[in-house]
Length: 217
Image (tube, rainbow, N blue to C red; front, side, top):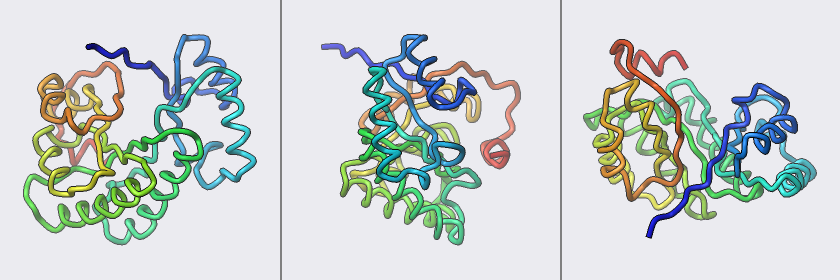
């Protein structure tokens, strides 16, 4: 039996204040939205109980749901131990907010997963394990966005982390643009972990390497 996926939009893509972005989402026929909560008017730390109630009421009024929160704190993901001292608690706070806003998915980039189990790999693994275990304890999936490494590398990493709270946000265009990976094959490789998907167009104009690409962010 086939399933119809609900189609949503990232509100920031409209370049409008939040309430106007919701109206635009309805106008284009979206059924839901994804919300960036790492900066701007929707930053996670700005949500008190009143703001949570107001946002949920607006969504109900417009017939929209939140498919996921984006908790991408940039930099090099979770590759730096010192940065992780703030990024891990912040990621847990975003997971808490997800539940309050009626979604069970938080998407993010975690940095480029090394192909070898070196120090950086172990730092990333420990961070994802801690966040994943917390997410699982409250019914949230921390969905790693595809792109920085090939699907096979990401699948091995997730298996090694071994946490029910870790999943995948499939972004086929990132795979094409960054590593030249086959996005169709990636679906089969990562299928048991995929909980959310991004759809956009993308081509690789020139190969730079994942480290150079994601260093920009």
